[in-house]
Structures are given as structure tokens and as C-alpha cells.
Length: 70
Image (cartoon, rainbow, N blue to C red; front, side):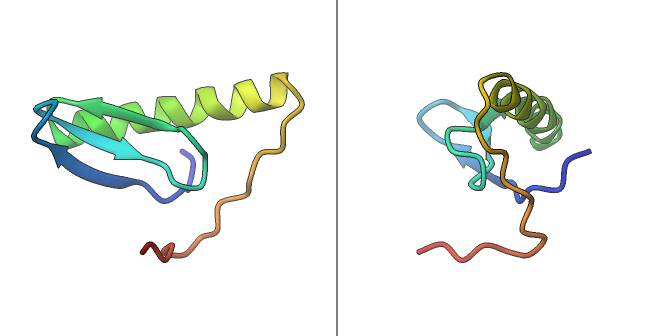
């Protein structure tokens, strides 16, 4: 299990829960329940990391603390 911060919220527009991983640009997924969205986020993180490694891009280390968002 990866230890990146995950932001989970309800999308009225899409009628699903969205899980975003702010430390990994563009890494987000969704699910019909909070549990599914969180489970999907772990797969999305794994795919993001694997793709970054494949293309030689840096993979940020999890900060291990809450991010400050404005």
C-alpha cells in the first residue's frame, strides 16, 4: 500500500466519489462508494508510479504529512 495523501470527495456532476492524489499530478480515480474509490486510488497510484519509472520520470516520495491546500 502506498502512503500518499488521498483527497476523497463526492462529485454531484458525475454522481460518484472521486479520489485525488495531489502529490502525483493527474492521479485520480472514482467509485460508486467511498470504499471503491479508495481501493481504486491504490491501483491508480501503482499505475502512475510504474508509468513514471518506465519513462524515466521522477517519482515523488510521500510527504507523510497533511498537505496544505488553498
